[in-house]
Length: 426
Ligand SMILES: [Zn+2]
Image 1 (tube, helix red, strand yellow):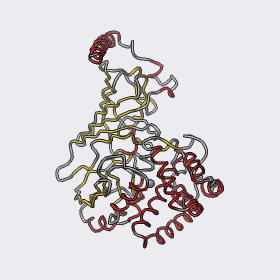
Image 2 (cartoon, rainbow, N blue to C red):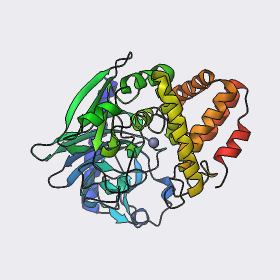
Image 3 (cartoon, protein in one colour):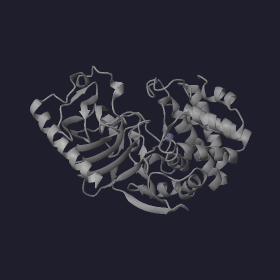
Image 4 (spheres, helix red, strand yellow):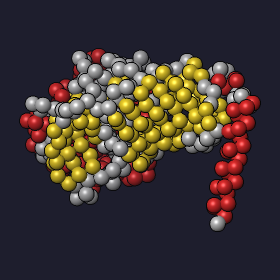
């Protein structure tokens, strides 16, 4: 009874305020906030992102649920915003310096907008799929691109061209990094690959002519995911996981961690390591999010190690070749240079322009764990990584947290390996 009474009171106050806002105009609007003069660090974080997308019209309605009422600054630089409402009704807004600013938001923020295609792996791509990693979500939906600010998602797509299907998750109930959401539209054929012991259904979607490569690349995928679930803990992004072949442009290769339907470039569909790598992001990168961009190695280094470890366990003949290939990749990455695999600081680096996005975090990260495994035992290290996952599942964590966990759980201080592999500038 008390709950219902409270709701009716709230509704009354909303109705009154909405009337005032419309009449008085700017009573609820903070001009300094709208103009971008106020301190942006007080902006409210995102709790849930609900997207209703019309692919034919390239328009969408985003309903953003916030962690609390207050001033909002969301990345929206690539969007044409046409209307913004909250519980009070239509709201004043500005898009300044790539950010959609609305003051004193009450209840969910509903943003109507148009979007456009992009061909630099930064939004809706010509091939029909989307990529917004690392910080391009503002080309597709209003967002906070910081992976530490996790969000749940719902997604609905209309306007899919005849003869094509759209592969996307309708709901993501656990908090995920903003770059995790994606869709892929194409002439897909789907096959089921099996079910893990924990009940997760594994599948693969290929494009015309792609079946042979897709089956080769995913032949151990169910066993690999089963190993992740048994070794690390439960998968948090639903009861299904699938690999989806996508057509990216020139110069893009590998895959992208769009769980639960992760994307693999058409040319990499026959590569088992790529599938195992993207699947592992369900636990690290997506499952455990990055506290700071500088912690990129906690995502890529950890999954590069885990994918090698899982494939070696389920198909031992692969182990020697995977680590030999990693060694070659490491040598090439060192020769090319870039930021240290684990730079100091927190969100002071631009992951792309400051060259943290090289193969160094992937490969130095993988060899960091391999060196630690040589000291403490690979099974013992599996236990450390599994406990770490369970502790930080659907939360942000740092590479320092992992180093501390290794030291605490095993008694072995990996500092010398950290210095030689992760902090070293090449
Ligand atoms: Zn990766």
